[in-house]
Image (cartoon, rainbow, N blue to C red; front, side):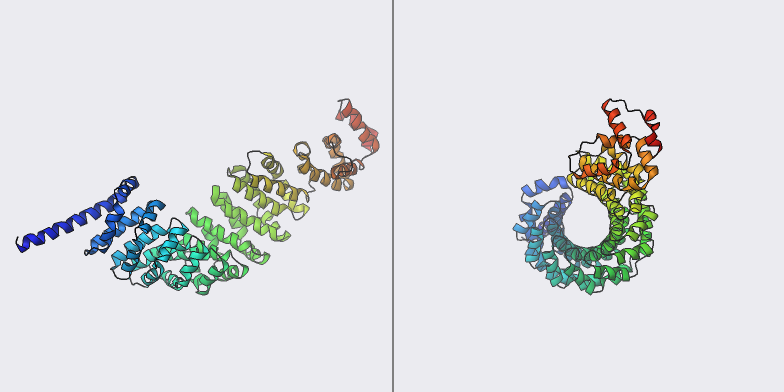
Length: 512
Protein backbone atom coordinates (compact mmCIF):
# COMPACT_ATOMS: atom_id res chain seq x y z
CA UNK A 1 0.00 0.00 0.00
CA UNK A 2 1.17 3.51 -0.76
CA UNK A 3 1.73 6.07 1.97
CA UNK A 4 -1.35 7.95 0.82
CA UNK A 5 -3.55 4.85 1.18
CA UNK A 6 -2.22 4.21 4.70
CA UNK A 7 -2.91 7.79 5.77
CA UNK A 8 -6.38 7.54 4.26
CA UNK A 9 -7.21 4.73 6.72
CA UNK A 10 -6.37 7.04 9.64
CA UNK A 11 -8.36 9.86 8.10
CA UNK A 12 -11.38 7.60 7.75
CA UNK A 13 -10.98 6.46 11.36
CA UNK A 14 -10.83 10.08 12.53
CA UNK A 15 -13.91 10.98 10.49
CA UNK A 16 -15.75 7.99 11.96
CA UNK A 17 -14.83 9.02 15.52
CA UNK A 18 -15.86 12.59 14.82
CA UNK A 19 -19.16 11.52 13.29
CA UNK A 20 -19.84 9.09 16.14
CA UNK A 21 -19.17 11.53 18.95
CA UNK A 22 -21.08 14.35 17.25
CA UNK A 23 -24.09 12.10 16.62
CA UNK A 24 -24.06 10.88 20.25
CA UNK A 25 -23.89 14.48 21.49
CA UNK A 26 -26.88 15.39 19.31
CA UNK A 27 -28.83 12.33 20.47
CA UNK A 28 -27.99 13.11 24.11
CA UNK A 29 -29.62 16.52 23.71
CA UNK A 30 -33.04 14.78 23.59
CA UNK A 31 -34.29 13.12 26.80
CA UNK A 32 -36.11 10.31 25.03
CA UNK A 33 -32.80 8.94 23.71
CA UNK A 34 -30.90 8.70 27.00
CA UNK A 35 -32.08 5.26 28.10
CA UNK A 36 -31.27 3.69 24.73
CA UNK A 37 -27.83 5.32 24.71
CA UNK A 38 -27.11 4.07 28.21
CA UNK A 39 -28.21 0.53 27.39
CA UNK A 40 -25.95 0.59 24.33
CA UNK A 41 -22.93 1.20 26.59
CA UNK A 42 -22.32 4.77 25.50
CA UNK A 43 -20.36 5.69 28.65
CA UNK A 44 -17.58 3.18 28.03
CA UNK A 45 -17.36 4.27 24.40
CA UNK A 46 -17.13 7.97 25.22
CA UNK A 47 -14.54 7.61 27.96
CA UNK A 48 -11.49 6.91 25.72
CA UNK A 49 -12.55 9.72 23.40
CA UNK A 50 -11.89 12.18 26.25
CA UNK A 51 -8.20 11.47 25.65
CA UNK A 52 -8.46 11.51 21.86
CA UNK A 53 -5.65 13.13 19.94
CA UNK A 54 -8.13 15.41 18.17
CA UNK A 55 -9.27 18.32 20.41
CA UNK A 56 -12.71 18.65 18.84
CA UNK A 57 -13.42 14.97 19.52
CA UNK A 58 -12.37 15.44 23.16
CA UNK A 59 -14.64 18.47 23.57
CA UNK A 60 -17.64 16.84 21.91
CA UNK A 61 -17.21 13.67 23.99
CA UNK A 62 -17.21 15.79 27.16
CA UNK A 63 -20.29 17.68 25.94
CA UNK A 64 -22.11 14.39 25.29
CA UNK A 65 -21.21 13.09 28.77
CA UNK A 66 -22.40 16.34 30.35
CA UNK A 67 -25.73 16.16 28.56
CA UNK A 68 -26.25 12.55 29.63
CA UNK A 69 -25.25 13.18 33.26
CA UNK A 70 -27.52 16.23 33.37
CA UNK A 71 -30.70 14.20 32.91
CA UNK A 72 -30.82 12.02 35.99
CA UNK A 73 -28.75 10.72 38.87
CA UNK A 74 -28.45 7.22 37.38
CA UNK A 75 -26.51 8.55 34.40
CA UNK A 76 -24.49 10.84 36.67
CA UNK A 77 -23.70 7.81 38.83
CA UNK A 78 -22.56 5.97 35.71
CA UNK A 79 -20.09 8.79 34.99
CA UNK A 80 -18.69 8.44 38.52
CA UNK A 81 -18.46 4.64 38.39
CA UNK A 82 -16.82 4.78 34.99
CA UNK A 83 -13.81 6.63 36.46
CA UNK A 84 -14.45 9.47 34.05
CA UNK A 85 -14.16 12.30 36.60
CA UNK A 86 -10.38 11.97 37.22
CA UNK A 87 -9.79 12.21 33.49
CA UNK A 88 -11.86 15.36 33.26
CA UNK A 89 -10.10 16.94 36.22
CA UNK A 90 -6.69 16.16 34.78
CA UNK A 91 -7.68 17.63 31.43
CA UNK A 92 -9.06 20.80 33.00
CA UNK A 93 -5.53 21.90 33.79
CA UNK A 94 -4.06 20.83 30.45
CA UNK A 95 -6.48 21.45 27.60
CA UNK A 96 -7.78 24.47 25.71
CA UNK A 97 -10.62 26.72 26.79
CA UNK A 98 -13.26 24.89 24.76
CA UNK A 99 -12.48 21.60 26.47
CA UNK A 100 -12.36 23.29 29.90
CA UNK A 101 -15.88 24.60 29.45
CA UNK A 102 -17.13 21.18 28.41
CA UNK A 103 -15.33 19.44 31.29
CA UNK A 104 -16.72 21.91 33.84
CA UNK A 105 -20.17 21.26 32.37
CA UNK A 106 -19.79 17.53 33.10
CA UNK A 107 -18.69 18.23 36.70
CA UNK A 108 -21.67 20.51 37.18
CA UNK A 109 -24.07 17.99 35.64
CA UNK A 110 -22.86 15.26 38.01
CA UNK A 111 -22.74 17.46 41.13
CA UNK A 112 -26.23 18.88 40.81
CA UNK A 113 -28.15 15.67 41.58
CA UNK A 114 -27.24 14.90 45.19
CA UNK A 115 -24.76 15.63 47.99
CA UNK A 116 -23.19 12.20 47.42
CA UNK A 117 -22.49 12.87 43.75
CA UNK A 118 -21.22 16.37 44.56
CA UNK A 119 -18.91 14.81 47.14
CA UNK A 120 -17.63 12.44 44.46
CA UNK A 121 -16.75 15.45 42.33
CA UNK A 122 -14.89 17.01 45.27
CA UNK A 123 -13.11 13.74 46.09
CA UNK A 124 -11.62 13.48 42.63
CA UNK A 125 -9.83 16.82 43.13
CA UNK A 126 -12.17 18.92 41.02
CA UNK A 127 -12.13 21.99 43.27
CA UNK A 128 -8.45 22.75 42.73
CA UNK A 129 -8.92 22.47 38.98
CA UNK A 130 -12.03 24.67 39.10
CA UNK A 131 -10.14 27.31 41.10
CA UNK A 132 -7.50 27.40 38.36
CA UNK A 133 -10.30 27.79 35.81
CA UNK A 134 -11.69 30.77 37.76
CA UNK A 135 -8.34 32.46 37.22
CA UNK A 136 -8.47 31.94 33.43
CA UNK A 137 -8.63 34.95 31.14
CA UNK A 138 -11.58 33.60 29.16
CA UNK A 139 -14.91 34.62 30.78
CA UNK A 140 -16.66 31.53 29.38
CA UNK A 141 -14.26 29.24 31.28
CA UNK A 142 -14.77 31.26 34.46
CA UNK A 143 -18.54 31.05 34.05
CA UNK A 144 -18.47 27.27 33.55
CA UNK A 145 -16.23 26.82 36.61
CA UNK A 146 -18.38 29.11 38.79
CA UNK A 147 -21.48 27.21 37.73
CA UNK A 148 -19.92 23.87 38.75
CA UNK A 149 -18.85 25.37 42.10
CA UNK A 150 -22.37 26.67 42.69
CA UNK A 151 -23.86 23.20 42.13
CA UNK A 152 -21.38 21.67 44.56
CA UNK A 153 -21.91 24.28 47.29
CA UNK A 154 -25.70 24.36 47.25
CA UNK A 155 -26.20 20.94 48.85
CA UNK A 156 -24.94 21.36 52.40
CA UNK A 157 -22.56 23.18 54.74
CA UNK A 158 -19.86 20.52 54.49
CA UNK A 159 -19.58 20.85 50.72
CA UNK A 160 -19.74 24.64 50.95
CA UNK A 161 -16.92 24.58 53.47
CA UNK A 162 -14.86 22.48 51.08
CA UNK A 163 -15.47 25.11 48.40
CA UNK A 164 -14.43 27.89 50.79
CA UNK A 165 -11.31 25.99 51.86
CA UNK A 166 -10.27 25.71 48.22
CA UNK A 167 -10.04 29.52 48.08
CA UNK A 168 -13.00 30.06 45.80
CA UNK A 169 -14.78 33.00 47.47
CA UNK A 170 -12.30 35.82 46.66
CA UNK A 171 -12.24 34.68 43.04
CA UNK A 172 -16.04 34.69 42.86
CA UNK A 173 -16.06 38.26 44.21
CA UNK A 174 -13.64 39.19 41.42
CA UNK A 175 -15.98 37.50 38.93
CA UNK A 176 -18.95 39.66 39.93
CA UNK A 177 -16.82 42.68 39.07
CA UNK A 178 -16.19 41.45 35.51
CA UNK A 179 -18.11 43.17 32.70
CA UNK A 180 -19.81 39.99 31.38
CA UNK A 181 -23.39 39.77 32.68
CA UNK A 182 -23.55 35.97 32.42
CA UNK A 183 -20.43 35.62 34.57
CA UNK A 184 -21.81 38.09 37.13
CA UNK A 185 -25.03 36.05 37.38
CA UNK A 186 -23.35 32.72 38.01
CA UNK A 187 -20.80 34.17 40.45
CA UNK A 188 -23.57 35.84 42.48
CA UNK A 189 -25.52 32.58 42.48
CA UNK A 190 -22.47 30.69 43.76
CA UNK A 191 -21.96 33.23 46.57
CA UNK A 192 -25.62 32.80 47.50
CA UNK A 193 -25.28 29.01 47.59
CA UNK A 194 -22.22 29.26 49.84
CA UNK A 195 -23.66 31.83 52.24
CA UNK A 196 -27.00 30.16 52.85
CA UNK A 197 -25.85 27.26 55.01
CA UNK A 198 -24.42 28.84 58.16
CA UNK A 199 -23.41 32.14 59.80
CA UNK A 200 -19.75 31.18 59.48
CA UNK A 201 -19.97 30.63 55.74
CA UNK A 202 -21.94 33.86 55.31
CA UNK A 203 -19.27 35.69 57.30
CA UNK A 204 -16.62 34.31 54.96
CA UNK A 205 -18.49 35.84 52.02
CA UNK A 206 -18.89 39.13 53.91
CA UNK A 207 -15.19 39.27 54.82
CA UNK A 208 -14.21 39.30 51.15
CA UNK A 209 -16.17 42.52 50.58
CA UNK A 210 -18.96 40.86 48.60
CA UNK A 211 -21.79 42.99 50.02
CA UNK A 212 -20.53 46.27 48.57
CA UNK A 213 -20.09 44.78 45.10
CA UNK A 214 -23.50 43.06 45.19
CA UNK A 215 -25.14 46.30 46.36
CA UNK A 216 -23.86 48.12 43.30
CA UNK A 217 -25.83 45.79 41.03
CA UNK A 218 -29.32 45.99 42.56
CA UNK A 219 -30.57 48.35 39.84
CA UNK A 220 -28.86 46.59 36.94
CA UNK A 221 -31.28 46.30 34.01
CA UNK A 222 -30.66 42.54 33.68
CA UNK A 223 -33.47 40.73 35.55
CA UNK A 224 -31.62 37.42 35.92
CA UNK A 225 -28.66 39.17 37.50
CA UNK A 226 -30.93 41.05 39.94
CA UNK A 227 -32.52 37.75 40.95
CA UNK A 228 -29.14 36.36 41.98
CA UNK A 229 -27.96 39.60 43.62
CA UNK A 230 -31.02 39.86 45.88
CA UNK A 231 -30.87 36.13 46.60
CA UNK A 232 -27.23 36.43 47.70
CA UNK A 233 -27.96 39.47 49.90
CA UNK A 234 -30.90 37.70 51.57
CA UNK A 235 -28.88 34.52 52.17
CA UNK A 236 -26.23 36.66 53.86
CA UNK A 237 -28.66 38.82 55.87
CA UNK A 238 -30.70 35.95 57.31
CA UNK A 239 -28.05 34.63 59.68
CA UNK A 240 -27.52 37.35 62.29
CA UNK A 241 -28.18 40.93 63.30
CA UNK A 242 -24.57 41.90 62.55
CA UNK A 243 -24.55 40.80 58.92
CA UNK A 244 -28.08 42.12 58.37
CA UNK A 245 -26.88 45.52 59.59
CA UNK A 246 -23.97 45.33 57.15
CA UNK A 247 -26.39 44.72 54.29
CA UNK A 248 -28.52 47.71 55.36
CA UNK A 249 -25.40 49.87 55.75
CA UNK A 250 -24.56 49.18 52.10
CA UNK A 251 -27.30 51.74 51.37
CA UNK A 252 -29.48 49.46 49.27
CA UNK A 253 -32.61 51.10 50.68
CA UNK A 254 -34.80 52.76 49.59
CA UNK A 255 -33.49 52.01 46.06
CA UNK A 256 -34.19 48.28 46.42
CA UNK A 257 -37.89 48.99 47.07
CA UNK A 258 -38.25 50.04 43.43
CA UNK A 259 -37.57 46.41 42.49
CA UNK A 260 -40.74 45.30 44.31
CA UNK A 261 -42.48 46.53 41.15
CA UNK A 262 -40.04 44.85 38.77
CA UNK A 263 -41.69 43.06 35.81
CA UNK A 264 -39.79 39.87 36.76
CA UNK A 265 -41.68 38.00 39.48
CA UNK A 266 -38.52 36.30 40.82
CA UNK A 267 -36.81 39.66 41.27
CA UNK A 268 -39.85 40.88 43.24
CA UNK A 269 -39.93 37.75 45.37
CA UNK A 270 -36.22 37.90 46.15
CA UNK A 271 -36.44 41.57 47.17
CA UNK A 272 -39.34 40.75 49.48
CA UNK A 273 -37.33 37.84 50.88
CA UNK A 274 -34.39 40.15 51.58
CA UNK A 275 -36.63 42.60 53.43
CA UNK A 276 -38.13 39.73 55.41
CA UNK A 277 -34.70 38.42 56.42
CA UNK A 278 -33.68 41.88 57.62
CA UNK A 279 -36.84 42.71 59.57
CA UNK A 280 -37.03 39.40 61.41
CA UNK A 281 -33.96 40.13 63.55
CA UNK A 282 -34.91 43.02 65.83
CA UNK A 283 -37.07 46.17 66.22
CA UNK A 284 -34.27 48.51 65.16
CA UNK A 285 -33.82 46.90 61.75
CA UNK A 286 -37.59 46.72 61.28
CA UNK A 287 -37.85 50.42 62.13
CA UNK A 288 -35.28 51.26 59.45
CA UNK A 289 -37.37 49.42 56.86
CA UNK A 290 -40.53 51.20 58.08
CA UNK A 291 -38.80 54.58 57.90
CA UNK A 292 -37.79 54.13 54.25
CA UNK A 293 -41.34 53.14 53.28
CA UNK A 294 -40.74 49.41 53.22
CA UNK A 295 -44.04 48.38 54.84
CA UNK A 296 -46.20 50.34 52.40
CA UNK A 297 -44.11 49.04 49.46
CA UNK A 298 -44.53 45.43 50.58
CA UNK A 299 -48.30 45.88 51.02
CA UNK A 300 -48.51 47.20 47.44
CA UNK A 301 -46.39 44.23 46.37
CA UNK A 302 -48.91 41.83 47.96
CA UNK A 303 -51.68 43.50 46.00
CA UNK A 304 -49.80 43.03 42.73
CA UNK A 305 -48.82 39.39 43.38
CA UNK A 306 -50.42 35.96 43.64
CA UNK A 307 -49.46 32.59 45.07
CA UNK A 308 -46.06 31.75 46.53
CA UNK A 309 -44.65 35.09 45.43
CA UNK A 310 -46.74 36.65 48.20
CA UNK A 311 -45.29 34.49 50.98
CA UNK A 312 -42.16 36.49 51.91
CA UNK A 313 -44.18 39.72 51.93
CA UNK A 314 -46.81 38.22 54.24
CA UNK A 315 -44.12 36.95 56.59
CA UNK A 316 -42.31 40.29 56.52
CA UNK A 317 -45.42 42.09 57.79
CA UNK A 318 -45.72 39.51 60.56
CA UNK A 319 -42.09 39.94 61.58
CA UNK A 320 -42.37 43.73 61.68
CA UNK A 321 -45.55 43.54 63.77
CA UNK A 322 -44.17 41.05 66.26
CA UNK A 323 -41.46 43.36 67.59
CA UNK A 324 -43.54 46.14 69.20
CA UNK A 325 -46.90 47.89 69.43
CA UNK A 326 -45.64 50.84 67.38
CA UNK A 327 -44.33 48.66 64.57
CA UNK A 328 -47.56 46.66 64.50
CA UNK A 329 -49.45 49.95 64.29
CA UNK A 330 -47.25 50.96 61.34
CA UNK A 331 -48.54 47.86 59.51
CA UNK A 332 -52.14 48.77 60.43
CA UNK A 333 -51.81 52.43 59.40
CA UNK A 334 -50.34 51.37 56.06
CA UNK A 335 -53.52 49.34 55.37
CA UNK A 336 -51.76 46.03 55.89
CA UNK A 337 -54.71 44.28 57.56
CA UNK A 338 -57.18 44.58 54.63
CA UNK A 339 -54.49 43.37 52.22
CA UNK A 340 -53.69 40.36 54.41
CA UNK A 341 -57.43 39.62 54.58
CA UNK A 342 -57.49 39.56 50.78
CA UNK A 343 -54.54 37.14 50.78
CA UNK A 344 -56.34 34.88 53.25
CA UNK A 345 -59.43 34.91 51.04
CA UNK A 346 -57.71 34.41 47.69
CA UNK A 347 -54.89 31.96 48.37
CA UNK A 348 -55.49 28.22 48.05
CA UNK A 349 -52.25 26.82 49.47
CA UNK A 350 -52.41 25.94 53.16
CA UNK A 351 -48.86 27.10 53.91
CA UNK A 352 -49.66 30.61 52.59
CA UNK A 353 -52.88 30.73 54.61
CA UNK A 354 -50.94 29.56 57.68
CA UNK A 355 -48.38 32.35 57.25
CA UNK A 356 -51.20 34.89 56.85
CA UNK A 357 -52.96 33.63 59.99
CA UNK A 358 -49.67 33.90 61.88
CA UNK A 359 -49.17 37.48 60.63
CA UNK A 360 -52.66 38.44 61.86
CA UNK A 361 -51.79 37.02 65.26
CA UNK A 362 -48.63 39.13 65.43
CA UNK A 363 -50.52 42.30 64.49
CA UNK A 364 -53.54 41.87 66.77
CA UNK A 365 -51.98 40.53 69.93
CA UNK A 366 -50.64 43.81 71.32
CA UNK A 367 -53.55 46.00 72.52
CA UNK A 368 -57.35 46.30 72.12
CA UNK A 369 -56.75 48.89 69.39
CA UNK A 370 -54.60 46.44 67.42
CA UNK A 371 -57.12 43.66 67.94
CA UNK A 372 -59.97 45.88 66.75
CA UNK A 373 -58.07 46.70 63.54
CA UNK A 374 -57.97 42.97 62.77
CA UNK A 375 -61.54 42.37 63.95
CA UNK A 376 -63.16 45.02 61.72
CA UNK A 377 -61.58 43.35 58.68
CA UNK A 378 -63.90 40.38 59.41
CA UNK A 379 -60.94 38.09 60.00
CA UNK A 380 -62.33 36.15 62.99
CA UNK A 381 -64.84 34.03 61.00
CA UNK A 382 -62.17 33.20 58.43
CA UNK A 383 -59.64 32.12 61.05
CA UNK A 384 -62.31 30.08 62.83
CA UNK A 385 -63.32 28.32 59.60
CA UNK A 386 -59.70 27.46 58.81
CA UNK A 387 -59.24 26.07 62.33
CA UNK A 388 -62.42 23.94 62.14
CA UNK A 389 -61.98 22.79 58.54
CA UNK A 390 -60.90 19.13 58.53
CA UNK A 391 -59.30 19.68 55.13
CA UNK A 392 -56.87 22.24 56.59
CA UNK A 393 -53.32 21.06 57.25
CA UNK A 394 -52.26 20.54 60.84
CA UNK A 395 -49.94 23.55 60.66
CA UNK A 396 -52.74 25.77 59.33
CA UNK A 397 -55.12 24.63 62.08
CA UNK A 398 -52.50 25.29 64.78
CA UNK A 399 -51.62 28.75 63.46
CA UNK A 400 -55.26 29.78 62.93
CA UNK A 401 -56.16 28.66 66.47
CA UNK A 402 -53.15 30.41 68.03
CA UNK A 403 -53.77 33.63 66.11
CA UNK A 404 -57.46 33.63 67.00
CA UNK A 405 -56.75 33.14 70.70
CA UNK A 406 -54.02 35.77 70.88
CA UNK A 407 -56.21 38.40 69.18
CA UNK A 408 -59.34 37.49 71.17
CA UNK A 409 -57.47 37.94 74.45
CA UNK A 410 -56.99 41.62 73.55
CA UNK A 411 -60.20 42.29 71.64
CA UNK A 412 -62.86 44.49 73.26
CA UNK A 413 -64.75 45.23 70.04
CA UNK A 414 -67.97 43.36 70.88
CA UNK A 415 -69.70 43.46 67.44
CA UNK A 416 -66.89 41.24 66.08
CA UNK A 417 -66.99 38.93 69.08
CA UNK A 418 -70.71 38.26 69.19
CA UNK A 419 -70.97 36.05 66.07
CA UNK A 420 -68.39 33.74 67.64
CA UNK A 421 -70.86 32.98 70.47
CA UNK A 422 -72.86 30.96 67.96
CA UNK A 423 -70.04 29.32 66.02
CA UNK A 424 -66.94 28.83 68.16
CA UNK A 425 -66.08 25.54 69.89
CA UNK A 426 -65.66 25.57 73.66
CA UNK A 427 -61.87 26.11 73.65
CA UNK A 428 -62.33 29.31 71.61
CA UNK A 429 -65.66 30.27 73.18
CA UNK A 430 -63.96 30.51 76.56
CA UNK A 431 -61.86 33.45 75.33
CA UNK A 432 -64.89 35.14 73.74
CA UNK A 433 -66.96 34.93 76.94
CA UNK A 434 -63.97 36.18 78.92
CA UNK A 435 -63.82 39.36 76.83
CA UNK A 436 -67.55 40.02 77.30
CA UNK A 437 -67.12 39.56 81.06
CA UNK A 438 -64.41 42.26 81.00
CA UNK A 439 -66.27 44.82 78.85
CA UNK A 440 -69.94 44.57 79.87
CA UNK A 441 -69.56 45.65 83.53
CA UNK A 442 -68.20 49.01 82.40
CA UNK A 443 -70.35 49.77 79.33
CA UNK A 444 -74.11 50.28 79.77
CA UNK A 445 -74.76 50.71 76.05
CA UNK A 446 -72.99 47.44 75.33
CA UNK A 447 -75.09 45.72 78.01
CA UNK A 448 -78.33 46.82 76.35
CA UNK A 449 -77.14 45.81 72.88
CA UNK A 450 -76.03 42.45 74.21
CA UNK A 451 -79.60 41.75 75.32
CA UNK A 452 -81.36 43.07 72.21
CA UNK A 453 -79.07 41.10 69.91
CA UNK A 454 -79.80 37.85 71.74
CA UNK A 455 -76.25 37.55 72.99
CA UNK A 456 -77.24 37.30 76.65
CA UNK A 457 -79.78 34.60 75.83
CA UNK A 458 -77.05 32.68 73.96
CA UNK A 459 -74.78 32.91 77.00
CA UNK A 460 -77.50 31.30 79.15
CA UNK A 461 -77.64 28.38 76.71
CA UNK A 462 -73.96 27.52 77.15
CA UNK A 463 -73.46 24.34 79.15
CA UNK A 464 -70.45 24.89 81.37
CA UNK A 465 -68.95 22.73 84.08
CA UNK A 466 -69.54 24.19 87.56
CA UNK A 467 -66.38 25.87 88.79
CA UNK A 468 -64.82 26.00 85.31
CA UNK A 469 -63.29 29.20 83.93
CA UNK A 470 -66.08 29.63 81.37
CA UNK A 471 -68.71 29.30 84.11
CA UNK A 472 -66.95 32.04 86.07
CA UNK A 473 -67.07 34.30 83.01
CA UNK A 474 -70.80 33.55 82.52
CA UNK A 475 -71.47 34.41 86.16
CA UNK A 476 -69.57 37.68 85.74
CA UNK A 477 -71.74 38.56 82.72
CA UNK A 478 -74.98 37.65 84.52
CA UNK A 479 -73.95 39.78 87.49
CA UNK A 480 -73.98 42.81 85.18
CA UNK A 481 -77.77 42.49 84.87
CA UNK A 482 -80.67 42.62 87.34
CA UNK A 483 -81.79 39.19 88.51
CA UNK A 484 -85.19 39.67 86.88
CA UNK A 485 -83.63 39.85 83.42
CA UNK A 486 -81.60 36.66 83.77
CA UNK A 487 -84.58 34.87 85.39
CA UNK A 488 -86.87 36.07 82.60
CA UNK A 489 -84.48 34.67 79.99
CA UNK A 490 -84.39 31.28 81.69
CA UNK A 491 -88.20 31.11 81.91
CA UNK A 492 -88.73 31.95 78.27
CA UNK A 493 -85.88 29.69 77.12
CA UNK A 494 -87.45 26.77 78.99
CA UNK A 495 -90.82 27.46 77.34
CA UNK A 496 -89.24 28.12 73.92
CA UNK A 497 -91.10 31.42 73.85
CA UNK A 498 -88.32 33.94 73.80
CA UNK A 499 -89.80 37.14 72.43
CA UNK A 500 -87.55 40.16 72.47
CA UNK A 501 -90.47 42.60 72.10
CA UNK A 502 -92.10 41.34 75.30
CA UNK A 503 -88.74 41.43 77.04
CA UNK A 504 -88.05 45.01 76.06
CA UNK A 505 -91.07 46.10 78.05
CA UNK A 506 -89.69 44.67 81.27
CA UNK A 507 -88.98 47.39 83.81
CA UNK A 508 -85.68 45.77 84.71
CA UNK A 509 -84.46 46.20 81.13
CA UNK A 510 -85.68 49.77 80.93
CA UNK A 511 -83.66 50.52 84.06
CA UNK A 512 -80.42 49.15 82.55
